[in-house]
Length: 202
Image (cartoon, rainbow, N blue to C red; front, side, top):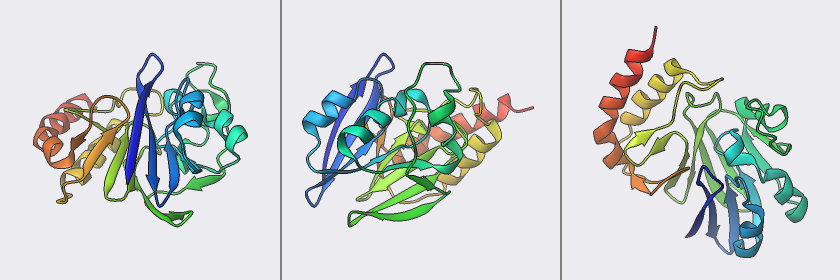
C-alpha cells in the first residue's frame, strides 16, 4: 500500500491518496486539493470523507466533476456538504454513498472500513484501509478533535474516546492535521483528554 499526503489550505488539512492494487482512494480533499490530486492520483476510484467540515470536503465537487468517481460521506454529516454551516463559502458536493455508522465496504475490490467515532461532528469517522487508520479530526499526534463547535458533542466525544481506549491493536494513525502516530502512543495520553472532556460537560 502506498500513502501520499499533502497539507491543504490555511488549516493545513492533510489530503491522502491511498493506492492498493493499482487503484487510488482519495481521502479528505480540502481547500486547494484538486490540482495536487489530479497530478498525483493514479487510477482514482473513489473519494472518501472522514467528516463534513469545510476544510476536509472543499474540493469534493471539483474532483467529482473531473474524475467522475463516487463520493462516500458519513450519513450524519451529509448535510454539511450543501448547507455550508460555518459560512465559509464551501463549494457544494453530493454524497453518492451515505455511510451509516460502522460500515465495512468494498470499493473497486479494496476493503474499506468506516469506524464511527462521533463527537467532533455527528458523523465523524475513522477510515481504515489496509490496517491503517485515517483519523480525520478524531485523533491527532498528542491531541484530539475539538468538541465545542456547532454540531459537536462533548458527551459523544467522551463515549468515542472511551471506546477507542479499549481497542488493543496498535493501528498506525494518519490524522487530518499534523504528523502520523500510532494508537498505542495516543492511548497513553487519552486518560488526560477524557478527564478534560469530562470537566467541560454540564
